[in-house]
Length: 210
View: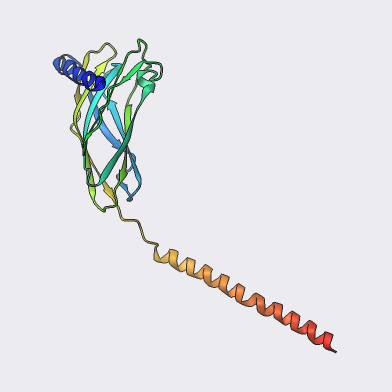
């Protein structure tokens, strides 16, 4: 309950002062644009173009295709906000709010944030591809940023990505041909060894009989 209230309060505070801040961009970045059924899909949440501001908090709402992917969990990049175990960071994430809709967010209480440059990893999301052959979407529906003083940073976030679940590839003809050739050679070797061995035994028995 505390996290939910805190997240709503943070959302309201950032929204009020949204027009008095700098520009930034938040986007989803996948490790790959296609996966196989049962595979794990990781999405990074990246902030950029925040013009030298030190980010002290974020709140991101994401919609995804739950017919193609199942949400597993999330991770917050505490290296940019402070030590979570030491109480320097408050995790205000709501997680999976409903099927196909989730939230991830955190607020730093640290007075000395590390230097932040370029594309900044805020957190990451983990999904598993369902056993379907289809293309699923992921989109940011709302995103908020605050600097280390709690002042809001205006954000653009209207990006949508699509990830395709591919069928498990069947062995190629060359692979099958190579496998059959290896099996044929192994069979030929195994077939010839007993004949040579039996010939030696027969010869030895023949000389022993005389």
